[in-house]
Amino acid sequence: MINDLVYELVQIPGPIGFEGRVANRLQELLKDLVDEIYIDKIGNLIARKKGTEGKRSLALVAHLDQVSMVVMKVDEFVWFDKIGWIDFGNLPGTPVLILGAERDVPGVVCASSTVGSRETGTLWIDVGDRQEFVSVGDPIIFDCPPRWLDDSKTILASQSIDDRVGCAVLVELARKLTKPPKHDIYFVGSVQEEIGSFGVRHFLRQVTPDWFIALDTGFAQDAKPDIQRTVPMRTGLGVRRLAFTQPATPYPAKVNFASPRLNQLLMDAAKKLNIPFHVDVSTGIWSDHNIAYEVNPDIESTFMFVAARRYSHSPTEVADLSNAERAVDVLYQAIADMGSWNE
Image (cartoon, rainbow, N blue to C red; front, side):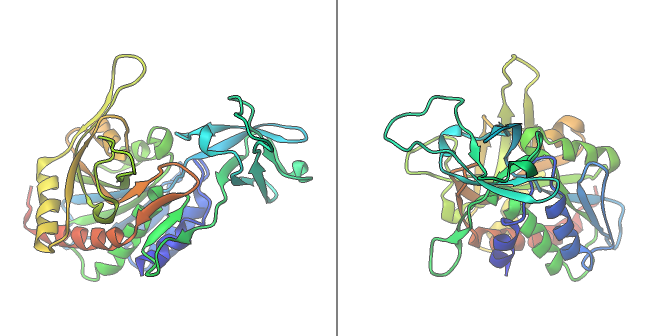
């Protein structure tokens, strides 16, 4: 069951630039379901299921990395900084895990012992007496155990829901594709998405698929209304029509004008299956699909959010995993419908 797989994957450390443990587990899960599989030099997991015709190909991409931190200095305490988009206001009192060369070292981010505000830049990690196992440059991840928020075990609160849900969808879809599709299918676990999608850039230097779908989580509605969080968590499945991020300097921006044909394909598949499906626009974040458009606009590409998550990039994101199962069904139907595509 996909919920169990997500529950397993969120517990595997995969900080930015150190995604090997996640890639290795996905390789184990996929190796008997595809015709070719390897991990490239930057760390991407690339698997290919050959199509009956094999003249054209679809790449399905989910990123392996999770937002993380890095050791900057070690004395009695461990001093650190963030890598990726993390709100430091969420960190006091958070359990963390430092991935040292010899061993993983648990720690906790400091928290105020008395009522009052903490000044910016005064956070550190307490590792007790294990400083000798920590070195400058070691990656750090949240270390909060996952927990179910409902009795049916579909609503999960955990770190790295972004994007272990997408990774699980890749595996479950490969399992479901027992018969070869018409077109080649690439199942890609990309690295370093959270800091600029360097993994997918490298993948697209090696492979030029005809179609590209990024499988990722999207923002869900929180308690407070937000135009960037318009998708209900329980029905958080859909496509992104446009993604745009404005850098600090005026240009160039990162943008993706999604393929209308791919979006329609996915929407039609959802309609056939009577699955709720949404369309959104993002003007503040990027994902691997932005980079596909940047690297090669000739590749038809889009973004499919396979679940909507609350409390993004925090130690405990929350998502309804029933959407992950729906995502597998929609993609399976879409791939079948692509059988009629010749160009």
